[in-house]
Amino acid sequence: MRYPLPPHIANLPSDTRIALLASGGVDSSVATHLLVEAGFRPDLYYIRIGMEDEEGFVDCPAEEDMEMVTLLARKYGLHYETIDLHKEYWERVVNYTIESVRKGFTPNPDMMCNKFIKFGVFEERIGHQYDYIATGHYALTEIIHGKTFLATAPDPVKDQTDFLAQINFKQISKLLFPLGYLNKHQVREVALEAGLANAQRKDSQGICFLGKINYNDFIERYLGKKTGRIIEYETGKVLGTHNGFWFHTIGQRKGLGLSGGPWFVVKKDCKRNIILVSRGYDPLTQYGKEIYIEQFDFITEDLFAHGSIGNPLTPKEIEDGCPIPITLKIRHTPEFVKALIYKEKDGGYRIESEEPIQGIAPGQYAVIYDLKKHLCFGSGMIIRGER
Image 1 (tube, one colour):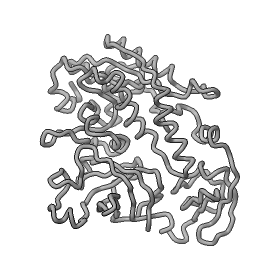
Image 2: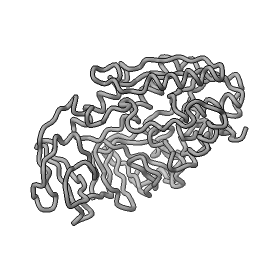
Image 3: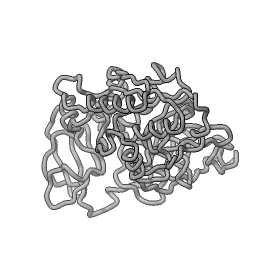
């Protein structure tokens, strides 16, 4: 095999029962190819979650996706099923997205999809019948002291651990990521060599359930429009109007319709439907170094438990509230930021970044890693950021 599987996958018995979540894209198709080449016979499942069943939303690529998975199953002689989780997806992910936006938060529906649908409802419905669930994510798992940890892929641009950082220990222990060692160019190369039908198919963009539906059109359908003022943060000057604070997020630069920029959204007054923007007279208005989190979800181990991986503190230091050094992301980006994480006496968490972070928004998730930027420990929803 030209590109071998990660060792912990390659060393599994060939009769290991694997359910592979096939999306119709090139990534999950190459994951299938690599498993078959290594002697496995995964069953393929396409999870139907799109909005094409909703009135007025008819421009979704589900039919084309399913056709791609059908061709993949035929090519390798694999069992294939479509699982309709539209209702569950609406209840757990779409409603979360709408309500988060309504409150002025920045949602992350892709994280919720992984947590509740792909590795939640699917596991309850189908996955429990299998030894493992495989996906086309760019990520790795690593076994340390008999426990499975989520680990970053070598390609920092494609690494998707930040989208997986809300899953729990039971879920990560059952996941396989065949693409873990590959970059996107190599994935395309394998797809072309294998003659996969979607080798040249473009990657999907945006939020998974929307397909080709415009995000603002979706938000407008459920939250409507309401004219409000755009005000300059430093001067209080009214610069223009917007159609509703729910169309905007902290750190946003495009789509404000203002001249003389660049302008950035630095604050939202949701009660008064006001957007506060800055052109950069004081760059600190766009940046913060402190992040506050009410609840943190650790994947494998509580980072603040004595002896856990990544925790260099003594029991006395833990009791005294000493911080743990980490690296951090608050959005999907190849860059990590060095930081310290504190466990507060009230049970919440505070993160101090070494350098200012642009656009800290309530609702975003702070994803934390070890100092080597390798192990992903988990994530927590940001309740506020401060300078």
